Each structure stands twice: as structure tokens, then as C-alpha cells.
Length: 349
Ligand code: ADE
Ligand code: ZN
Image (cartoon, rainbow, N blue to C red; front, side, top):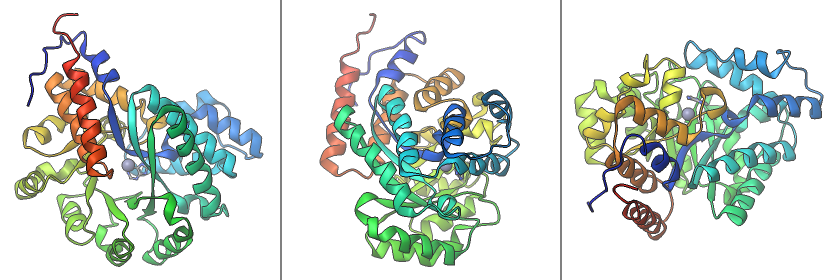
């Protein structure tokens, strides 16, 4: 590796914020800020259980993944029209551009919307137009990944895929999210096999709250190209060696893991152990409106808590490009830009 200048802890946050990066684990419905929830509720005449923005924010005190998901799905109920999905994604993409995200692979949960009678077409067209505008205005490349809700059935997942296929050109792959415990990846082996036959990229949440065995299933049965979260891998040394050797990316979300009590504090987060073991770890925001920060906040707070340095900043941003689904030449160009950014930093200014 080239020589990375020494950056003082005082200067590091600014470097983290300015460095170019990719974000690979963001649920667009999880970027729905309380202010926008209330604005859309009024626009669409949807009644909300909370009296104000403040009351809603005060309810963001989660015990685990499920207690978060209950509020997250309730929040999404204000999204009805194509314009709503555009507004949602555009708000995120403006923040991402300000965070120097040059590439985003964005999850969305179609079944949350189709179950309320909102057609897949409405959802994806709104999101897609926001992605197009981000590319035009910021040069930010934004790609979409619909996720299957794992608490629903295999049959429901196949129905989602059927509804999605007319819009195949608007998304790059599929994911698997929602309540992990009790819903192992094995449940979706056949639908993922079909997705791979269709040439879609495949990723899956595994090892967020669930055991290392779910990560193995995601790799062996779903052939997942990336593992979302994956932090429970540390409990299985053989799995750790496999993830390192095969450079299977983990899209880790530090603030999410604290808010959902996967770790008691950021200082106890295991991201440094994962990096030190040679895994292709990346830093992401998951559901930034609910977890107290966008991607740069995740970098800055994590680095302060774990005492990480500029070399690790470079490595994590490098990994974010390596782990993306862009073509090889584009990844190289982004990594070259990242190197140039670090080479441009002076030791003492
Ligand atoms: N959907 C939105 N955020 C999620 C998370 N952290 N885990 C599983 N499903 C999700
Ligand atoms: Zn997630």
C-alpha cells in the first residue's frame, strides 16, 4: 500500500467526511425522517399514532430488531404515490452526496407497500427517478435492490419477484431482510436460485441477531455475494477464515448495532476484529433516520470509539468500492480517486 500520511485524531473526522465512499446497506424506508413522515401523512390524509415529530422521535428507543421493525413498517404507511417515493429517495440522495458518497446500492421493501395496495410500479418509478436525478445533478451513481421480507412466505417472495420483473432494468439484484430469528435463509433457497438464473445479484441479511449458521446458509444455499451485517461471524473461527479467504464482503452498520442492542456500546463493537482478521468489511447506515446518523456519522462515531486511524479509513472506503456491484473498471477508477484523495492530504495542515 502507498504511504498514508499521519492524520491527528482531531483532523480525522474531517478526512472521514470528505473521503469518497460507497454506501451498500441503506434501506430507503429507513431514511424516512419524522418530519417527512408528518408532511406525507398530511399530504395523503393518513392518520398517525403519534401526535408530533417530537413524540415520534421519542419512541425511537428499541429493545431489539423486532421492536424497531414494528415502528419502521408503521412509518412507511405514509408512502402512497410515486411522488412520495421520489421525495423519500431524493432526500436521502442529497444527504449521501453531501457525505461524499459517490455510489449507493439502495434497498427497498416492496412487500411493505404492495400489501397496502401500492403497486410495485409506483414504488420503483419514484425511486428510480430520484436515482436518475442524483446521477445528473451530483454524478452519484445510485442502484436499487428490492428485498424479500423473510417473515413472509416463499410464495409471497415469488409473487414479489413476478411483480418486479417488468421493471428488471431498474434494479441490479435482490436482498433478504426483516425479522431474522426464526426465518433462516434456507426458507428462500428456491426463490434465490431463480433470481440467480435471471442474472440478478443476490445479497442477504445474516448474522445481525441470528447465529453464524445463518451466514453459512446465506453463502451455501442462497449463494449470497455479500452478507449484510454478518457481525455474529466472530463466534465461528472456521467461518471467519472462509469469509477472509473468499473476501466475502460484510456490510456492517455500527450505529444500527448499538440502537438495536447487538453490542452494548460502540467501544465494544467488533468491526476492528473483523478488519484485523482480513475480512472485506464496509461501513454503512442501515436505517439512518431511526438510528441517529447517516454514513459519515457512522464512520466518525465508530472511529472515535474504537480509536481507528487513517489507514483503516482508507481500507474501509477501498472495501466499499471493492464490494460494490459496479464493473471492474469503474471500481478501479473510484479506488484511484480514493488514493488520490489520501495522497493529497498533507501531514500537518
Ligand atoms: N429492515 C430494515 N432494517 C433492517 C435491519 N437492520 N435488519 C433487518 N431488516 C431490516
Ligand atoms: Zn439492514
